Image (cartoon, rainbow, N blue to C red; front, side, top):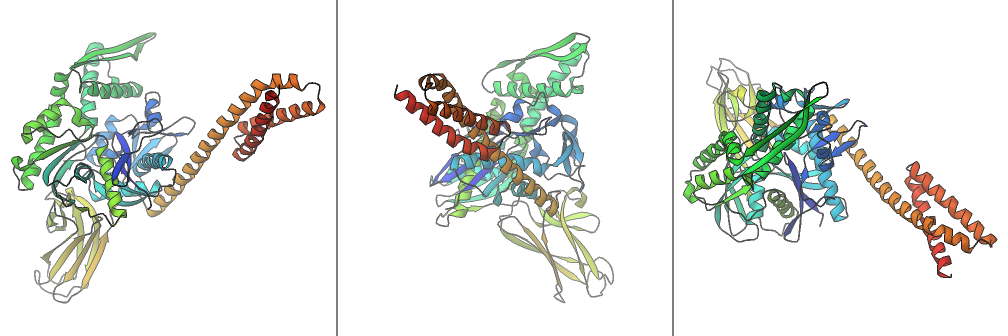
Length: 607
């Protein structure tokens, strides 16, 4: 059966897993780590860096190192999150040609799906190295509260990375799959997912018959560990300004050092009560005068700084439980997902809110990827009886007179689903209506996300209110929305399949995918060359060690001298192939080097 991977494309870290048999496994990267930083950098030489290697050079190359790109995926350029990020990150956020967000690195701009595709391609490479085979299909997770444009942007990122995205599933749902799969349990669970950039809360029923049903979900796609880091950074910057009169925000390298220090301090305070932040030579105050930053941060201070952020998550939990028509006492298990749930204050507040200790049985950084792998296995293997019933996280509807938003499919409706509503014309003799398809929770249409629009023309002339139009929304299992409108008297019908936009055209996606494939081929060739180079240099070193002794043994033989001259020529050709990075010539040279090595060993064994 074809291997399909599960990918948790995270704000801070990403993770890839595979389900082999009935057992899902997280795949470690080459460094042995099970998660990879969701960071991309471009060096001065134009080389692309992804993951740990990008993170290691972030301080010295802050302007050209992207982190937390997931917070911008599928966003409009002028959206509040985009404007907020523009003020805080060291890299340049610019407006794209389709009012989307682009990132300027070195001498070119990249779309956010393009950056995300680089991370997904790294996950694909990690999986292929582990499996020893090509991987072309994946299930990718997204925050439950992502809208359709953000989901489509994630799909496009997968396409650019060379992956067929067979399903997009919600992160809390994936976590519940990993928690309940194969356990034959009947439980009502809440998944509290606080990651690096987003927050989700989902309430699910897990059935012993392997049915996973989402009851309600909500969240905030701009609330997570990045905001906790920012509070520590603000505290450090303010303290330094009070002490030295210098605002560290003016120096991008200092800002990146503060970001790293804040993240480390936050992690330290998950296991200890106090930590030391020490940043020598943080900024230059004048000629030959460098200033240092050194402060102690206590856990209680961090909790005070971030109290409102934790409270926001608890407020969303309360609204979601209420929306589900449940009481907190009915929730049997609370599952913590995401790195921020290691924070003591988060664990304490969640326990207080639900009146129970959260479960400790899942790994907060790995459980989402494991769930994605389980979903991948179930989609590919029809013998599996697992059934996943998810919900639409946002209300769907249309704009009506006065600029208001009229709901057709309510938030938290189980998908697939279909709903209809009847509307009437608002003017005498009106022969056409424009139907704007929207997604969101605001009563004002303009404050919601526009998914698509179409004009229904050819209506019969009649007084206002006399023409009745039935508008039907359908959502399939993949989350694709179709909208149709029908004149109930004449049967005239018009429909549209709503295609959410990532801000990229089909041509752009195609070109980016081709460029990504070229990069992958080049990288694989480079890795192959590197492997051959190391092997050639190892054999050359061994021949060099034997050379003097072999030369001494065959010095009186004309045949021996000829063999030595040939060996020198072979070594020279191998070194030339290495210098010119010519893989084919180097492969041929390795074969002849091996024969020379064998011959030298044979000569020495007869001595």
